[in-house]
Length: 462
Ligand code: ATP
Ligand code: MG
Image (cartoon, rainbow, N blue to C red; front, top):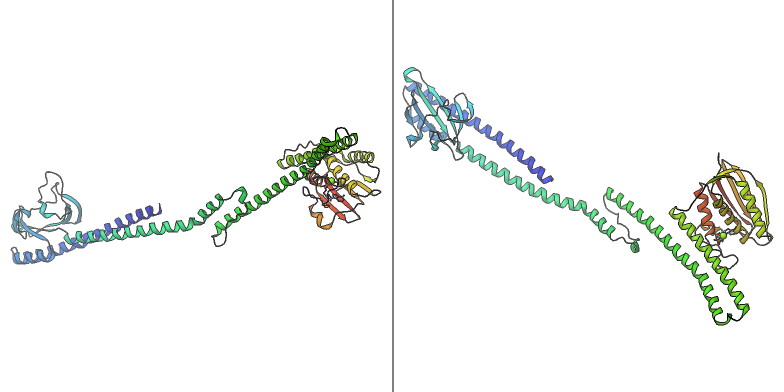
């Protein structure tokens, strides 16, 4: 495209240069003819005749053909070998094809193609042009016409060489431009090509590949950097997802193996042994229950990730919910002291059962991780247009290094999974999702062997 535009510009430029060059040559040639004519007229006036020798000399010098005619246009003298070629070119005769008048007595004529052309071919040059001067000398009976014809041989030769050199250098120039252009665009597009190849190679199993950004130009660096960042995010979320799936399968395998174990036991000895039968059924029931809980939790988080978990908000007073939880907790647990000193009636707009679920998760943890005789305190108060709910226990606490991870899925501070304390490790993740989904904040403070305090907020209804 660029090469084409440049060719076009060069073409126009060449035409311009050629036209002005030709115009200049024509002008100087036409001036030369006029000078010759003045000389001849001078001789004729002085000698009262035709100065044949002088005219012949002039004709040779300036490479022109000179003829003299009488007042009736009859040939008197010519420097042409063949006198048929010496024809009076009458500028007022309309079959003379005048290209341009270059002076009052001079004109550039072209070989007309018309059939009534009376001018002989010999007076024109190979391109069909001739420069003609035709003027009269003397008066009355001694009036004569002098006609000088210049075939412009030198000028056309010059023009030819000029055009050829110009065209040749232009063709060379265009070839060079095309080569440079192709090379430059290849060089410029190389990073894009590399990027395309690299991106084509990215697969789900090869997310660790990154684009090399050293040495590329700024724009490409930005693009490659953006792409690398995207790969980082994809990779980390993919790894998280993978981890989640493998943790979930792992968690499901334990209850299934236990169930399998009891079924085998039953199969071998249990059919007639009432004690084994009873124990197995209880165990299988409990494992199945655990599995159901785990799957429900997993489904909850999956719905949360896909943002399809139903959140049905309504107006209610948070203190009623807290009272309800305290009542229920006291019913199922009498090993701990449940305290509630402050329970302000704050109206919130939220999903009742989800908020209840979140508080239950915290209370369950407190019950689970607080030795018998310990106390669990619930509080609810208003602060900065928020309902602040705290669940505080006097339990074993969470080690400092585990604190940042307690909201991660399947994370458990205590790696040993005993039946009493071993949950799924999803509770805190679910609770956090619920709080964040309601536009609240959550934080946890804990001190080993002193206790744990969970504090979360839900925006109050104004
Ligand atoms: P589940 O999903 O059945 O509740 P879980 O209780 O193990 O299992 P989370 O509720 O998510 O899982 O809690 C994550 C971990 O944080 C727990 O395993 C425990 O180590 C720690 N933790 C949470 N609450 C407390 C607490 N009140 N006291 C001490 N440790 C706690
Ligand atoms: Mg828990």
